[in-house]
Length: 204
Image (cartoon, rainbow, N blue to C red):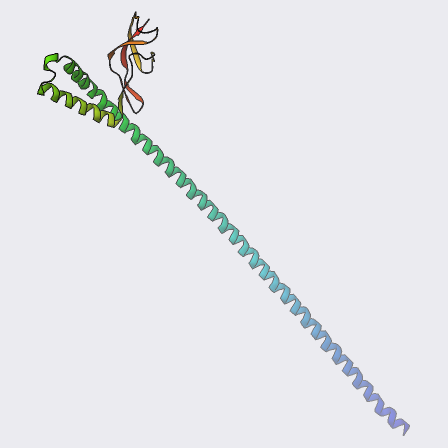
């Protein structure tokens, strides 16, 4: 009786040993799986980080490119604006130069008109011819004035070399020294630029 019980107990110990070994193997497998899973997760995270870094780098490159293009566009706009301003200025200068040349050629005609009107005898100034010439002269001077052509003040003003050309000095009881005593030829300006200086005599 005692021997049989001992014989039966021995196999049970073997079964317990097998069960413990099996549990140990399963635990090891689970740990291995967890390790592999963690490594795979870390590898995936590394890939994600690399992709994110690559994407961030690409975004930075695109931002830099956009900035360069924007700077280039602003420079082109500034250059075009400068070109347009320069062109407008040159056109204005060319127009003024052309107008000045035309005015210089018209002024002798104005001088002859004035001489002709001044030479008309007093008894003929009311004639239709004299009045017609007077009207044409006034019309011519009005159009010149509309263009910006103005006569320079001379007689009775202080001599100014920017506007007056002194051709002689005279004695005068009427004016002080340095004052224009007489205008020998009328001077004109065009938009504040002297087209022709006034030819004058100045009190010494």
